[in-house]
Length: 250
Image 1 (cartoon, one colour):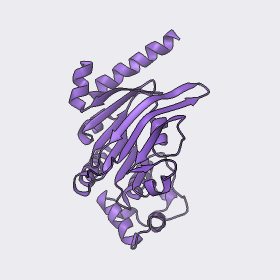
Image 2 (cartoon, helix red, strand yellow):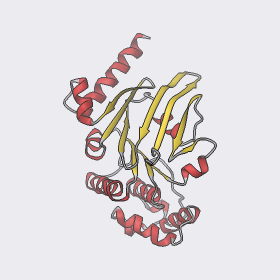
Image 3 (cartoon, helix red, strand yellow):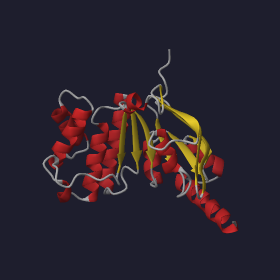
Image 4 (cartoon, helix red, strand yellow):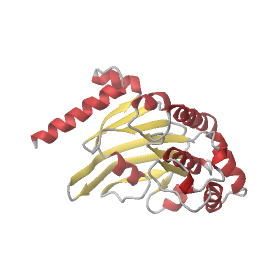
């Protein structure tokens, strides 16, 4: 019997006062698969991501994570999910090791201190363990957030702009570590990013959204060939241009 999909979202719809943000999105991530969810601003990425995590209730459609249906089984589903984003705040008056230890305990880890130090080591940041939130740069806070996301060895790792505030050398280190986590640990990755080079190096499949709908789903090579562009950045710019053109006609 095949294991359940890490994520299976079907027919997601979300309406806001300003209009329809997500319009019938289907999204599946297989165990161990590395998928990027891309699109220009206003395409519906964030809303789709939040619905897939159970943080926003869809007006229509269904979401299953690791075989658990949301919202009924959200607690069990989220036990196997790690989420990281550069914009998530960290406590100002708590040391990093204390912060990670707290999450480790909440996740039921037997040795949360060891897990916290191993997670920091994985991203080359063991020196951040004694640091306070007020003492860290935005890039360092991002590293801590990603370390928190992998602390409990999740089966699905969801990362929103994971390297947006990182220097290129540290971003490379993070991408390398994430690939190892997927290849050796079997974790599935769902990533959003505006860095198309990063996506091409990290993800094996790309899902492009535009105006709340899936407009392309395939490998980076398949998508660039379909749109007649040299790379994913060309596809991204093309979709952004279409968005702006349609907006001007309204």
